[in-house]
Image (cartoon, rainbow, N blue to C red; front, side, top):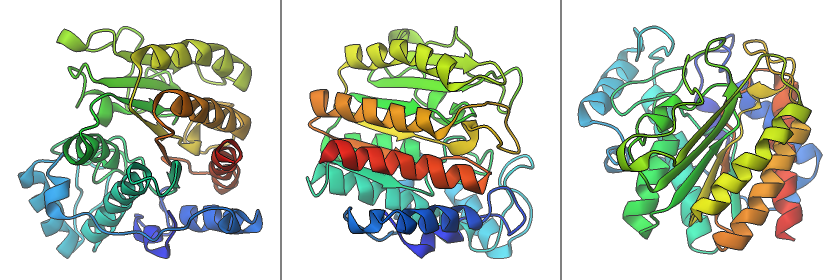
Length: 310
């Protein structure tokens, strides 16, 4: 999924989540000639009805109102209410849903959208630069529109995907696997090993906190358990949030992974998707605030989707 409208989801030129993130990805994407190897599809906006699959109407109304004034915050102080942010956030969510449509209608096996994976927003609030949680909306959309019940959500962003985890903590049909920097050392301060789900969903969630300065070697050693966990779940669809902020050199995190880990995870999940999901998988860019890391990590993921698909 590629379209310059996605660059409009940002919080200012100097903000960590600025418009340059999209342009960095696109520049490298075209430099590698990947635009000649994939099906390109343009963004679209989510409808208000689609937003309500995950978010409360009261919260949606709040975003619409503050988006008009561009004043204040959508949460407790992390996510500014920039003018037009409602429409921009709808574009992110709608593009994620369009990617799902393309996969489910067999227009492609695997899809990738760069400005997506806004995994911190809750059902009734923004959080951590995330206005609408397109991951959560995607899960509900797959179930409502396509009757896909067993979904694996995999997250390798440095920050724990708390907005997804707690929204589906008691959902036994949502397999949740998250490798992230230890919550005692990084926002949002969640995602501990003993958080495995609630009620009937106990044992369907796997949180893997990594200590600061963790390397590819450590992450890959832990990945085997994660992959076995997903395979035993037998998902019908795989969602991957591949935030680039887990790479060494990110200005707001402290992990030392490289894009090789992102490429490795993407390739392993594609094999798993081919084996169990008829090749149904969507990767979402997620976080990342070092432009060079965004260039390499996200494009390495795309390349591995192409290689396996061929």
